[in-house]
Length: 186
Image (cartoon, rainbow, N blue to C red):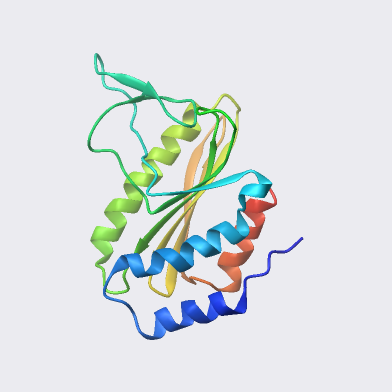
């Protein structure tokens, strides 16, 4: 069944687009509501704000097991995207990450935004390469004000790929259809 976004939330996004806020965090509330509307806990999803994306362990370094069941290093330079949407689990080590959301103000430079999302995409590809199944898929969205960039991370037994689509409306039909497809398991 298609998800319905409340009209008040769409109006809130429009207000943010027309009067861009000074602080990036002003986008967090509306985006959190958008993600939790598409990915509610009652359906087994977990929307993690400021999730820590741990890197593979270095030789001889301390290790831990993260919420996806991967062996990771305990380092201070891990990434923290604004949101990570996962298929949740009742245990501490079996979540399946589906979607990375990184948010930037409308006036942030492309180089800074690209650097952060590139780190998160690298983590996503490392995670997909460690899966026991032959195929994996994850999505990443970089929100820069009213425009978004979508990155599709695909891992197969013979290849890996990152495909990007640029300048999508942050709350436009294309992004909402992608969120619906992720929710529907496509």
